[in-house]
Picture (cartoon, rainbow, N blue to C red):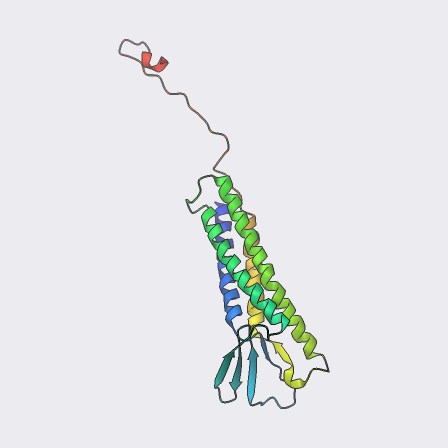
Length: 215
């Protein structure tokens, strides 16, 4: 019972982590304009994402433009695109694997095999969390380095956007949920030894044993 509850809790955390990861992947707020001048009132705010760049005017209007060429992007954005997409696909595969081996489903009969399948699903979630963590930390490191680099013009300096924080939260949920799934074990009610009982004998009307019991 405890193992099944642990599986359900781990799966819920992984599903929420997958949703947050996909949201972070689609948001254009990986990099945002840094306000480091004395006057913080500017005409527009620039958002840079994996798939598009947006300019938010001071009047509230927003214009977005999809990146035309992937080769024209910086190396960190190219790596972030590839790794986040791979991580999202792995999360979907991990979900199917865990559901197939969960104790609350009947896709497999043997409890030990089901536990191993769930463990494999947990490993897939942990690997997907690492895949999305690499571009997040790489992007954050580049943003911080450019921010404190005096050779970078002020107009090109950026700050960490909300998408990175959402991605870090997704990574934490995937790591925690995947670790819980890796701790899954067969239910204690199933044992490898089967007990066989001898059939009961029936007595005839004259008190003798039924001869069919000896056949």
